[in-house]
Length: 591
Ligand SMILES: Cc1cc2nc3c(=O)[nH]c(=O)nc-3n(C[C@H](O)[C@H](O)[C@H](O)COP(=O)(O)OP(=O)(O)OC[C@H]3O[C@@H](n4cnc5c(N)ncnc54)[C@H](O)[C@@H]3O)c2cc1C
Image 1 (cartoon, rainbow, N blue to C red):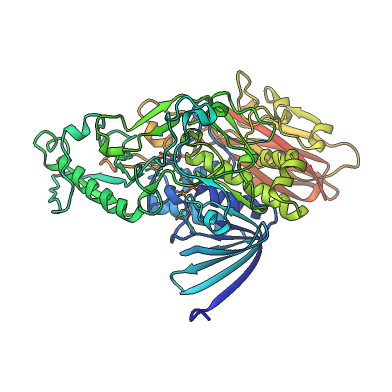
Image 2 (cartoon, rainbow, N blue to C red; image 1 turned 90 degrees about the vertical axis):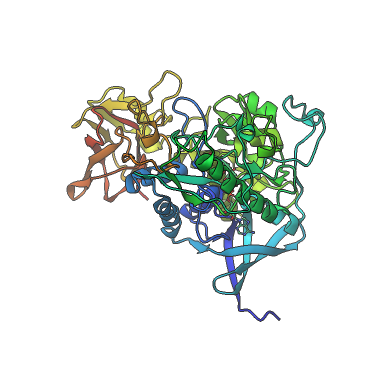
């Protein structure tokens, strides 16, 4: 008998790990009516994106390729609430989106330590909540491992891979000749703050001695908005899980060592005179460890050839950013090689559930990909899309009593439809516009009005895919006789390229700032977004108006109490740009 209280929870879907992939999986499933328990071992959500590690969210390169769905919702909320890009406020943005969902039970400070199988299914996991000294036993129909390190692999016996595949295994030209156990390393970040006057620094005796020679292929520069010391990287030649604590100690020695070099070396100290340490990460950010084996293992070829999968549920578009496993110790090698990748490339659903454990999904850096493919799929906006895909798949599986594999075989089109309805872009597919919108008469004084029901909710290729007009312009649906709308779904333009004036890149493009320079200007909600609009609709009792003011989101759903036979969207103002763009305007049949 345990001396600690045991709490038993039963749920549809249990997500282990609350990084951007786990958070997105939990929110997506909950919004589709699934009961979710989200277990996160840290006091906050976000994983490597949180204030504990401080990685900024990257994703697909290229024009209009920014990821939408939950990750864009989070980023727009952050632009609105956190113009100075404060990490504590960002933590609260991630916490809020989960806390708002009544279907999610969130367990913070709770570590999954074990589980119980029944045949090929995981039935229950056991967790320890540090702050309350309670044991949680969580029974679920479905599980998702979004822990990064794949804690449920040893628990379930699910097959996984750690290290790099040999070149001939999948015919990957950028893989090493022989398979090995090496991974990309871990890093600790430094946030530097600039002060009006000099700040001195005395190094601890245990700091590593860093020299100019160590930095010949690495260039610290606190004034560069892309600087966050990511190349302070170690541990790739060691056990990426078992040696984490020792690697953390080495990383701290290195962080203090480099700061000593920057502050006290005669060649460096003048330009860094007014900088001080604001924060040093004590929790190493981990790039790579166990990757599950699913029904499909995605490879370098799939990335390079654009990932044209029938079961596409997400996309990537970061380069294959393959860090040298020697990290900072390999001073004669560049810290990473950016092998080009097309943007976008598709990611298949079959890489998101276990080959052997019948009710186990995964999302994040641990999906079923080779090391080389993972060097691209691991960035956090991609991870968030993977999480949203898994959350939506879990909702279908739970409602229809299907296994993850059966969802792929029987309901893949529904899964893709639901994702596109949630504003996730699936390259090559067109969203099914609501039948009511297609059957209604559309009137408008905007240019290209028909684009609001063409099923593509962003510019693609040369096509803008948006109705365009100035403040005061309108779009109106006249519904067929006897039909009624109960809600509308709108997609506005959040400027997926986050176009900025010259010199403003750091303000809007980067989801977060890193080094804190003396002069920092506030960022802002993209100027293209529609801010104020009216929905004017006809009901049996007469005309009604819903006035929406201060909108700062891209995907907006509004219900129409009283049911409508005619619906007009009138644009009143954007956040600054003269022309408003509407990518989608769907009227949804009343129930
Ligand atoms: C130094 C560094 C720099 C990087 N640079 C970038 C970048 O600039 N942009 C970018 O987009 N990506 C970057 N990446 C990659 C990216 O951060 C990761 O690939 C991504 O965070 C993986 O997401 P995830 O949700 O799978 O894991 P994580 O973000 O690690 O989240 C997993 C969460 O699960 C929790 N967890 C683990 N075990 C358990 C358990 N047993 N029980 C409960 N919870 C558990 C963890 O504490 C963690 O919070 C970088 C990574 C590193 C390490």
